[in-house]
Length: 250
Image (cartoon, rainbow, N blue to C red; front, side, top):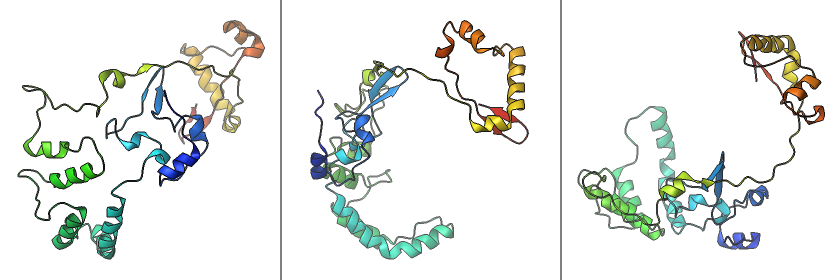
């Protein structure tokens, strides 16, 4: 069962701005945001797995426990902005940040300053794991698992990550229960059709000869062909796009 959350609760638990009231109508504030694709539905997912805050609307995401670190790093790199812009404009292949500054940033982030990437690895995996652990990531051990390589499931079973990645049944999606829809109504053509009416008509005449469409039909003939009353016909609007060498009908 999903428990509704009030605007007051959102304002007390998040530093994110509130979104438009439409978010309430499409259930973005639910504990599980559902996506509806064709006739199936499934929970919203992203590359961070099931515990990822990215699966929640921004106002429902708790403030990051590492937010202060971002401000500290910003103050450290701010003097480098002009040099960084110059480096990018000149097409430099190497980054402009001195090693001393990078070491200061790594020290600011928390782990011992002498921590180095494992042999054969380009990333500071210990640093990444420490940050993930302090942010409450339940999969924080994964970065250091990479230091020795991980099994691919060919000769040995792959690593387990209970509760991190969706099951096959969740990936497949559930049958979507269609809600009651409003009665369909017809719409007038777009104004572009009036400018190219002869070309649009010629397109349909050609398609009649190819057996792609039927017509032209009167309303009475169209209603008989669709097995409905004339007042129940719902014509879709046409548009015409000038592509220079031809007029494309939509």
